[in-house]
Image 1 (spheres, one colour):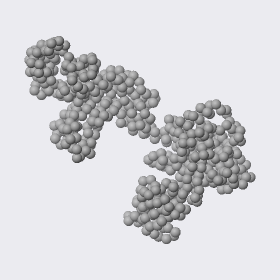
Image 2: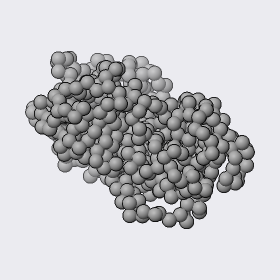
Image 3: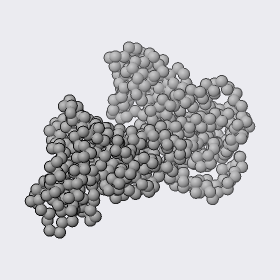
Image 4: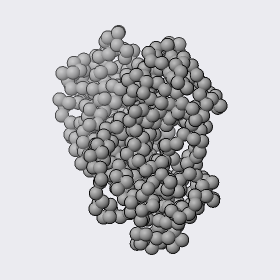
Length: 622
C-alpha cells in the first residue's frame, strides 16, 4: 500500500491520501480529494496519477499551465519510486509506503499520567497568539469538509502544524459496543486514580475486541519506510476515563532498543478523547520520539507536555461540538423529508428522541396512489428515465400537500405515498388538515389533466382516508431515520384507496372519518356524501364508505341538492326499494361517475334486490 503526501509552504497545507492500485486519479487545485487548493500555481486539473503497486506514474495534463519538476528537471511525465517526490508550484508530493497498524498491542508502558481538567486549566500558553490563530481557523476549516474522513484529514494536518513535538498523529474511532463493554468493566474498578502511577499498579482494560477500534486518518512527518502502531490500550483508557492520558515506553536512561523499537519508532504518546453525545467516540492520538524532544530530558515528561495536551483538548472540544452540529444538520435534513416545517419547529422545542419514539396515538391516515402509471410504463418502456421523472413529480405533489398541512410522510410505495397526522404532534384540527391536503392533491391533478403539456396530464389519483388508534414512531438510527405508522387504520386507508377505482370517486373515507368531518369540518372546506355499504374482500365487518368532495363553489357540477338526491337513492337502495333508487340516480348529472356504480349494480340485477338483501355489497377483490 502506498500514500501520497502533499506538503505546501505552510505546515498546515498538507494531506496524506492512499493511492488506489491500478486506478487513475487526477491531481489539481480543484480535483476533489486530490486537491491542493492552497497553491495557485497548480492548475485545477494538473496531473494524472497511476499507482501500479511498484511505482507511481505522473503525467502532466494538457490543460496544466505550470511544469512538473522531478529530480530537479522539468518533465511532462515521470515514474516516482517510494521515498521520492515531485514538485508542482510550491507544493511537494512525496510517495511513501507506510502503514498504521492497530492489531496486537505495544508493551506495558513504564510511566503513565492522567491529566485533570483543573490541572490543565491553570497551564498558560507560551505562544498564545499562534494557538488562538489555529483555534480560530479550526471551525471554518473543518466545517467545509464534506465527510467525516475529510474532516479528519484537515484535523490531523492542523495538529501536525500546531504540535511541533508530534511526530505522528492519528484520529481513531471506538465502536459503541466496545465502549459499553469497557464501561461495565470500568464500573468494577477503583473510581479514583492517582495522577501518576506505574503501569503495573493499574488494572488495564480488556483488549479482546480487536476490531472495535480503527484509525480513520493518520499522518507522520518522516517519509522513510516505516509503520505507525498506536496503542489500543491507551486509546481505550482515554475514551473510557473521558480525559487525556500519557504513556512513556522508554525512559531517558534506557537505550532505544529491544521489543518496543521493533514495533514502532515512537517511545511516548498521549491520547485525548473526542466525545459527542449519541455518536461513536473518537480519539486524537499523538506520538513522538525521545530523541527529538528536549522536554523528555527535563524533569517529568508528562508535566512538560501539559501545554500541548491543553491545546489538544481545546481542539477535541471544538471537534466534538462540530460533530454534534453536523449530526443535527444531517438529522434535520433527513427528518425534513418526512416532517413539515410546522412539525420540525415543534420538535425543536421538545426532546426530539423522546418525542419521536414509537407511541400509540389517534391518527388520520391518508393513502394516495397514482392512476395511469401502468399504462404509461408500457408506452414509455424505452424511456423509463422520463417516466421516473414524471412519477417523482407526482409524488412531490402528494408530499408537498401533506407536509403543507402539518402531516408526516410515512412511506413511499412505488407510485403511492402514505401520510398521516396525530404524531409526533397531535394537531387538534388534524381532521380538517387531512381534508385540505386530500382536496388540494385532487385539485392539482385535475388542473394538470386540462393541460396536455403538463407532465401529469394523463395521471389521476385515488385517495383513501381513515382515522383511529395506531402506533406511530421513528425506527432506525438518526442517519437513516424512517417514520411509519402501524395498525388496522392503515389497512383501511389502503383498502379505501383501492375502492376509488371501483366507485370512480377520487377520495373515499371510512365511517369514523366521515363522522369526524361532519362534526369538525365546515362545508366551506369540504363536503361529504355517503356512497355505499360494502364488505371489503377478506374482511368480515361491513363498511359504510363516503366520498370527500370540495365545497360547492369549487365543484359546481355537483350541487348540495344533487348530493341529497344521491343519498336518497342510497337510502332506497339499502332498503331494497330499487325502483325508487333508480329514479333518484337518474336525476344526477352525467358527469357524476359515482352514481354509475349503483345504477349498473341495480341494472345487472334487473332492478330487483336478491333474496335476503341486507344492503351490503360484497367486493370480489381488493
